Image (cartoon, rainbow, N blue to C red; front, side, top):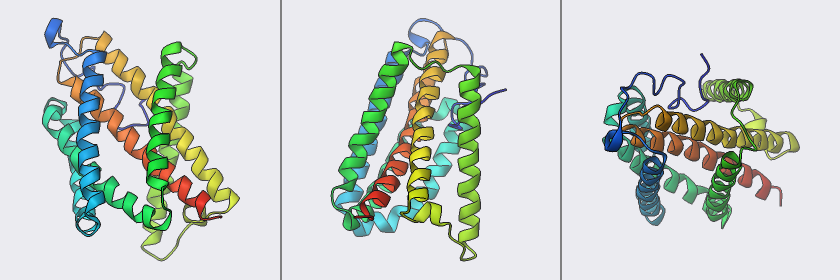
Length: 242
């Protein structure tokens, strides 16, 4: 069974939930509203960490770990999403705010550029998806899933290698190959948004319970966080060449 590159949006994400109807059923508009709430919460946490660099950096690792735990709770306990998804958004807002400030100190203006590009990609792909120009066929899903899995494995290997003092220049360098790699990763992360749109639409069509709106919004957040971080990394590589 095919899965989305986003671990929160598995093919069986909605199958295991009971169908609902009327006001108790998931809707696309309801999911969009919940996504806006999560983005707003994350933005407030981002601004807080940004305005307090020392505190943000102190809380970076705890927020990163707790955010990962909150994501796992949301994925495996979907009915808890109305509570766990906002918690995840707060924690990721702190993480992104602290990391963005570190990049901002080296490359002034980079955070604003990354934010604008992230939302530009989001709305562009949403428009393309709604127009039908991109169709999430089985082959499309298989390709995105394989590429996302490959990137995840490579990142895991590089992290383990880092503990032994081995660092891959393709990740941390600013040469043509490193920049090309970042461009590919950004594209794959962006294509995961198409997968997200499709899975959320399926959930609404299948009459998933209302709490799945929070789950769908959380899933979008996961992809947007990844996309933002990859765009930030790409911009830093480009600016370091100047």
